Structures are given as C-alpha cells and as structure tokens.
Image (cartoon, rainbow, N blue to C red; front, side):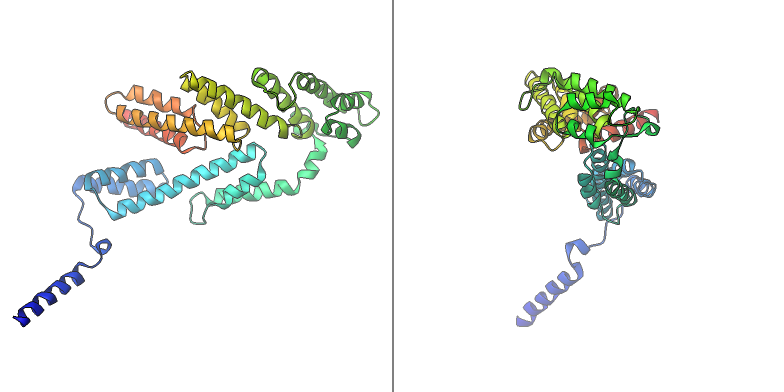
Amino acid sequence: MLMFFCGLALLYFLGLLLAGHPGDRPELPLDDQSMVYFREGVAAYEQADWSRSERAMRAVLARRGDHPRAQDYLDRLARISKDAVLLSAAHLAVKQGRPARAVTLADELAPTSPYFAQAEELRHGVLASIETAAARRAAINTSGDPSAAVLVPEMVLGPYRAGRIRTACMRATSGQYGPADLRLWAQNCERFRAAFEKLPPPPGSLSDRLGIAEVALELDERLSGGHHGMVLRPRIAEAYAASARAMLRGKNSQRGCERAVKADRYDSDAPGVRQVVRHCKRIADRMLGDALLLERKHPERSLRKYRRVQGMVPRDSAQHRSAVENERGLAWSEER
C-alpha cells in the first residue's frame, strides 16, 4: 500500500514538472483566419502603421481569447500610443511658450521608443532656444516679418513691461529713444494700449471681452515677446473654461467642449481648465463607444461622431487620437 501511494505522489510531481508554470505553456496553434490577422498585425507594426496593427491583434484575441504574442504586441502598441501623446504634448508646450514643460515631456520617452529621435530633436531645439532667448528678446519682431526685427531700447521697453503702456508708446513715437523703425512698434503699442485699457483688471472676468483680450495677447507677443501674456493667458483660459461650464450645464456638450479646448490651448495647467477638459474627455469616451457600435450598420453616423469628438478634446489627448485613427480605419474599410 505504501508503495502504491508513493507511486501516485511521484506521478503527481512529474505532472507538475512537465506542466511547468502556466505562462511557460506553449501557445495553442492559431486557426487560419487568426493567423491571417496576426501576420497582418506584425506586418503593419513593422511598417509603423500602429492603428492597423492594433486592430489586427485585437482581432486575433477576439477569435483566440488568449495569445501571448498578440498581447505582447498590444502592450508595445499601448506604450507607443502613450509616447505619441507625450510627443504631441511636448510640441504643444513649445507652441504655448512653455519650454521647460516641453523638455520634461520629451525626457519621458525611452530610447527604445520609435518617437525617441523626434523627442531628442525637439529637446535639443528647445534647449538651444532657451540659451539664445535673451538675445532674441532684444530684437523685437514688430511686424511678423523676421527681416523687420528692430532693437527696442530699454527706455521704451522698460515702461511697457512695467505696465506704463502710454509712456512706452509716447517714447517710441517721439523718435528720441531709438531708430525711426520704432514707428511700427509705436503703432502696435497704441493698438495694444487701446485693447488693454478695455479689459477689467484682475481678478475681473474676461468673459465678455475675450475677442479684445486675444487681440491684446497677439500684439503683446509682437511687442515684447509675450511679457503681459504671462498674465493674460491664464485669464483668457479661465474665461473660456467658465463659458464651457455654462454651456455644458445647458446640455450643449459640443460647443461647451469646443470652448474647453480653447481654454486648454491658453493654459492647460489651470485647475478650472483641467476640470472641464476632464469632463469633456468623459463625454468623448462615451461618444467613441457609441460610434464603435454604429460602425457596421451605420458607418456614416459613426464617422460623424468621430469627427465631432476631434473638436471636443485637446489634440494631444488619447480620445482625439482614437477618434482620428478610428475615422481613418473606418474610411479605409469602407473604401475596400
């Protein structure tokens, strides 16, 4: 009897040894259609067609249920998607005049990322621009034409930065403090003063003065490289965010979220802006789910939803990327 139980125990341990760890078990073979999807996914991945590769690998899992290699590709694609969002956010930070934020985002990409070279190029470019920022600010571009840059003397620029706009405009007009080329700077200064004086002082709301505030912001960029913009941008962003909240309360999600996107362009770090953008991302997630369900029977309605989503969330968001890629994938499948 003892020998019998010893034999059973030996067989049990041999079975465990042969079975190994569940993750070490060999993959079951794919059926013909799943293999077609898998090969298509691999080929698309090697061609950097991330959207098509993801669709194919998801099709494998939909048929097979569990396939480690397909899942591995999906994990890689998720990392690539995150890197694409980071790189897009870094480019946006550069456009918004936030170089430190751009460098921080670019640094998050690993050397193995397909976007690493682009991130390094952006990072080096931003660092180089920071090193020469002082020299660039000395030559203020008053007309938008790089060849028209002039040196604005501190006797003119100092009062402007200090908020004594009228004094700065008068000194530029007089011709006593700089070259005759300052006449264009003086004209823009007067336009800025006219707009700036119509704006309520902080913490007053700019909700009914947004158009004027945006004109002032653009002129300030020409006049000083964006000195007063550091104060104007957050105020414009909050005004757009307040307008977005009001429209969302009124069940106008499309226009409300379009306003939220504008707020994000001016100051994506403001708490009020982040809150309303998060709300719009949740709305976009629901719309993406609805659009996905409509793809087979109502592709035209699905396409319209994907296009609407693109205007309701920031361009560097995962929802915007999904809407763009799903629209392209659906249009491609319809063409076939």
